Length: 266
Ligand SMILES: [Zn+2]
Image (cartoon, rainbow, N blue to C red; front, top):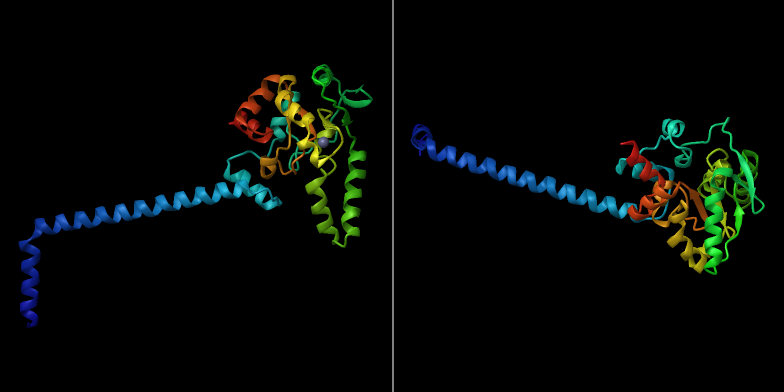
């Protein structure tokens, strides 16, 4: 076929079958949209599948903690919240330190210093446990900055003795012991019960606490499935007073303090 004939045939095709060609173009565009739609849909599915698998992991590093919190649209800065919120809903964690001039009204309860405002509720909880044949004892309540520093430094030394470099020793210590200023124990609103024992979660005392602590305004502060949000290891012994109303809501929704307060801030 000569060049002229070819272009004639081309012209005929174009002018003669205009309607048909629009129809074909429309089908192609539609197909492109469908393909693009499927592509973005599968991207979305992939993102959520990977995202939820990520959340289920219990390993924790600072970076993954920040990433996880951002992914969940949670707040990381509670400084303004802490200045205005009810005293029982303060959020103290690695990123939100207790202020230097923070004052706490302490009173001894069963030989342990705590914020005096939580004593009636703590007392009710301890007595109710006793009635149910559950033996609870408070192993730690309020801690001063100095006391927390001593505990933290001891952990750093332990890691140094194991052969870690200084920076690594500090990082490892802060995953297990709160850095001075970032411990909830500075507020006097938290208590450790029955010693610091990992196997406490296998006891009937723990089971009783999980089922009953919210009635008295307390929450398990560092849950096993919340390590990536609280930035803390699972602490089955650590209970924090937030008030009955909030404790019950957190228990029902399965939210930790950071998640719960983030929702209130929105
Ligand atoms: Zn504790």
